Image 1 (cartoon, rainbow, N blue to C red):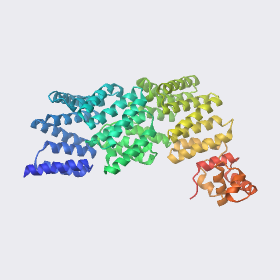
Image 2 (cartoon, rainbow, N blue to C red):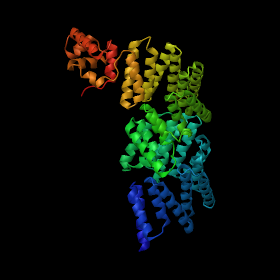
Image 3 (cartoon, rainbow, N blue to C red):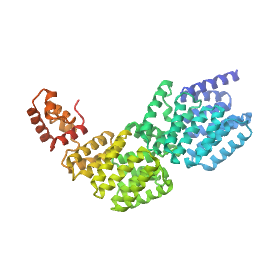
Image 4 (cartoon, rainbow, N blue to C red):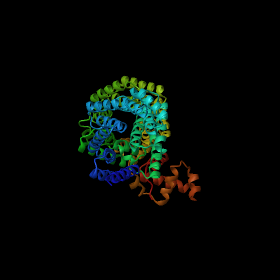
Length: 549
């Protein structure tokens, strides 16, 4: 009777795990353990607790599972527990000696097993534990060969994602992104057996998209992942990593949800005393706070994390925002030296050029912009090219070369628009407005107005304040949308909307069945009420302001 109850309990626990009912699965395995010390129940309970984000108990249970499997001579199952423990001790607890010990134990077990997928899992785990993804390419390639020969889709997906991440880090962005795309196909096509692999792959794809500066790709995969989870009923699979989950929301423009996930994850790390699995949420949340103009909050978030490699960019940005350009430059030079080149250097070089311009070091800013152009030419990656145009345009504007600045900044706007990166496009528009403020004020007002609307909508208050200040300096309205619209009559609002479509007075009159002279009268009233000087300014105002319901 006991054996039957244990068997049924284990089957029920595995079924609940498969359907992502983590708490119910944990209860099922605990019920088995209440009557029998079964290693498989410890193993299942550990996996359920991992999804419930109770890492310490998960490690304890899978350690117990390892011991039980060894006692029963089930070395293949003990091996899988050992490689998992090697990763958790390194990635979450930061205990490198313990991690190395578990990995060595897994190697010893694998040597006594028949040739199979275990060799591949050793290789991919070794690669995942390496600090530099580029150094993991050989491990990932070996694991991929084993996965395909043994028919293990879990290993294949993990190896593909790791190989893609390493290929991107080595500089071949196009090939690397193709590999991570293939990994995501395996994940979302229903081929996986272990749901933990879903988390691993999504985490690596998120990291690859960030390092490749390809938010649009992440946004597209986000749609597929959401549909997969809805179709399968696995709606909690995104909870594998709070920082990655936030990145996915950021890619889709949902800043509020991203902020919620980062705050929650940071709290959990503080409570549990664990390390972040990938990029530390404090660094990402600090970047959000800077967008919101909350420099002091960003600085407090980074306290204690300033020297982490994944936090150096955010720390430098905070120091720059606080006016400490010397420290910002030193931090950026340190990190640029560490990454050497490639896509990881793009945001670092872009910020360094800003710092150098603030230090009135035009020569160094120009050299940094040239380095960024070289990275863009080497990688042929659109985001890097857009960033190089934006930086070069800002440097040219700072040096008084308006024609060159306009050409480079307009190229940046076009590229970021195609990549569906509205905040970056708005940064380029604001820079263009600054470049044209003396030579073409009407266009400057328009570009600054569009940038302001984007920043306001995204909640990027810090950048919005800069755009609003420039608009005020140019004599245009700033943040007067809802209030100013209330000053206009219904007909004036209709005329303003058509001005935004670049219609002539005659065209507006034809659309509204009024005379061109009456339209002219309405336009004069609009300009007076909104304190605008031209039809172009009125059009820019209409584009950046929320329309009445």
